Image (tube, rainbow, N blue to C red; front, side, top):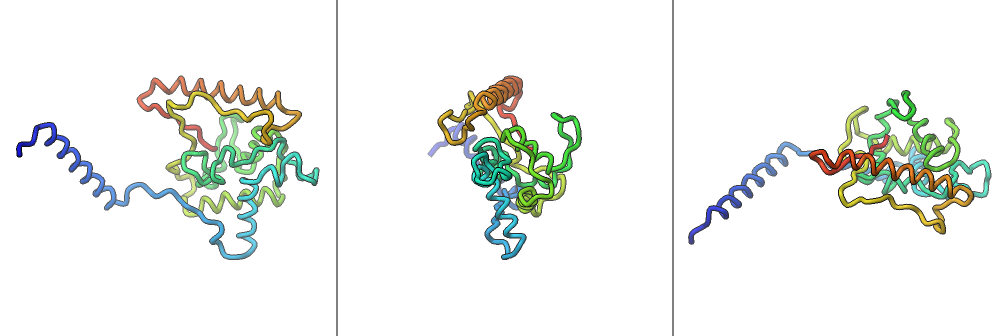
Length: 225
């Protein structure tokens, strides 16, 4: 049976792709995305601290939110959680993961125009994104968050770039999602402030997307830190 030139070309291209794929597999290819499991840690103080740090990421409002029973523990000014930005407790690829972040600090922060520590970066989130106040540097909560981020970064060299870092947006993103004013994540008394901040973030994202859509790649990355 005769085979057209077009089919021969497709067969040759397929064979070439298979060859390249096999070669990449033999050479190891890109490293697999880490899958840290805090539950697998040995019992003890380290595991308890790491797990508490994870809870602070996933249950922020319940532990240090504006409605907790102890007024001294109200460090967050709204009912958002850290994983509203850092999805999957900071473990999801291209969703502002915290994996590898521990070894990225201290680092230069353009917004502050100075070198900052990881503790200062965490408190920056509490003071801006969470509309609250800084965690005590020597307190249980800060130690737990640092321990959790260090655990997530186990095995990653200090300063090494992490594939999957940041947050990638594509052509399909047309606007930021805003919380409904009737949602539990919307803090009473700070609606106008939060709305102004979200409008500012929205404008920033639109400007950055417009500036990069003309580039060869249709994607841009927002990273943490």
